[in-house]
Structure formats: C-alpha cells, structure tokens
Length: 113
Image (cartoon, rainbow, N blue to C red):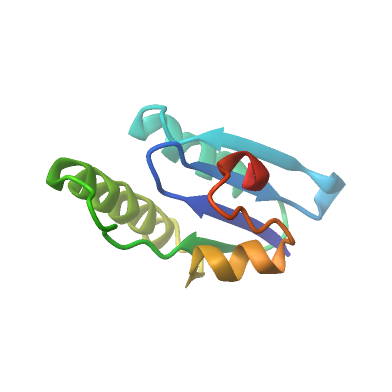
C-alpha cells in the first residue's frame, strides 16, 4: 500500500511513501494548483493502491478572516483532488497523526517536517 499524507496549511506539504522501490517524495503546497495535481498524478503511477491521510483542519482562534479562508480553500482543493483522482482518504487530526508518527510538535513545526 502506498500512502499520501497531506497538510493543507500555509506552509503545508504532501508526503508520499510508497512500498514499490521504497519511494519517498515530498511536495510543498506553495506551488501552483496544476503542479500539485501533477504531483498527485505522479504518485498514482506506482503500481500499488494508494491511501491518503488528509489533515483535519479548522479555524484557529485569533486567525484573521483571509487566513482562515485560504486555509479552507487549500483543504477543499486537496480534498477535491483526492476525490477526482479516486484516492480513498481519511481525515486525521494533527495530534493523532503526530502521535502515530512519533513526532509531536508541541508548536515546533520543524519537528513534524
């Protein structure tokens, strides 16, 4: 099974971990939407099925309206890409995936990167 991990935040990224030839790829979400789609398509060329984990996001206290909108837009775009490419996915909270990967950030994003 191949896996995509997607953090749709402002400094978010997509990580691909494949079992075929132990492929590991990462991609920053600061690229264009067509570049993000091309990356997803590239990941799906690996012969085994792919499952995605999409970080469950929500508005944060004291976050301005435009930031919240951009955050939601990025989440919706990533979710739409997964649906359009028929990639099964689950949403997962940051604390849950960080605990599973043994990289609890406690506010330090460099730990999770």
